[in-house]
Length: 535
Image (cartoon, rainbow, N blue to C red):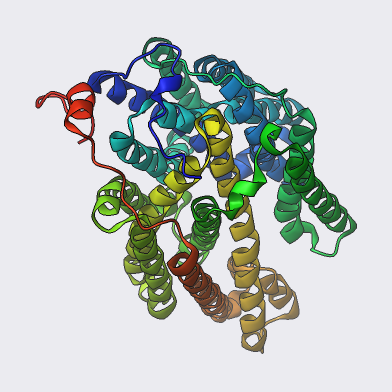
């Protein structure tokens, strides 16, 4: 079943929006999405400030950061489905209101408990916003323009996190950590004002009752599995809490699939559709690509800060070239799909991302610094941008128009799982490689300093400051050992991308391009020469 068809018939307002309104719709949902994405990564640059301000432990600080993502991921599917039924515009307005109010409370919080509560509510608001932003595009834009709009959305979703982190680091550096919440609040207010005037409402009446059981089981499954991926590296994969979470998550996931098969057409998510190449291939590609992207970001920060000695602001700025290339390639991908097809475009992107990882493994060095990893970062950015856009369109095009909120939510859940999985696995590979490499380089180093250095490269840098004549040797050992761990993680990423490339080549989305609009459609939807909706 291919449901990649014009969806504007479901609009409550009726008719196809003209070029100017389509442009305003795209700007509006991009701003709303940017607010959500910026809040995912923004607090990472303020961990020390949060610990000092609230007298909180590192574990509590990590919960303040991670609980937002946990709430967001858990509620995406249920709230995406609610938006389909009740109306996407009302859901977006409500989500922006909840998200904005919670962000204000978080910025004014005077205790860790209030901050935690505010972050949970922010995650709820974000789960109301994020799937709707993509569903508005797929339910509003005519087919011949939908690919370009999805490309813009994907670029913001992929590169927005780095841009948000950079702006957050800048605010922390020049002002105060509480100013981190000014950015999402301002973006929310702008998006809310534009939503009221620009976004058409669309809803899909359903003949079936809402799948409450499926929604609840999906929440349990997502919360448990994301919890395991977030807490496993910190507390150990064999810790009781980790094992219990994994067991609950797997049982809930199996139960969700069984229940959805039982519900069939009345299900929250028709899992039978995963038999299709578009949905399965798009989901696997997004899971892998976002996993590698998130894992590389986690590896890059200690390299830039602990190995090269850069500040947090400069380290964040160093990621911008990759983000810019990713956003540019996301916008270019729809044009390439028209020329060579979705599967070929995705395959080219995956291959380029793999080449980027290989370059970062081969060229990285302490003495060469940032320039040794820049070529690989640029190749990765282009590759990820080219692969994300057709994968996203394959997912949304595989579900019927009355399920576009669910389709968008599935896309977002896949991203969140990939991110958590990539951080956990690539982070573990780097840590394992570092520990294995540094052991043979600590001969002659005082025991206390050596024990500290074994914990990680940042610990080694701190220990070197008080190691007297051993400082240079200890620092050199830690830096070289981190590079060894880095290379191990990069080559693992190359292997993963290689497997994904083979999968896409044989089981990826159909290698077809979107239909070209006929003259009648162009007459309705095409912009005037002086007012093109897409640059």
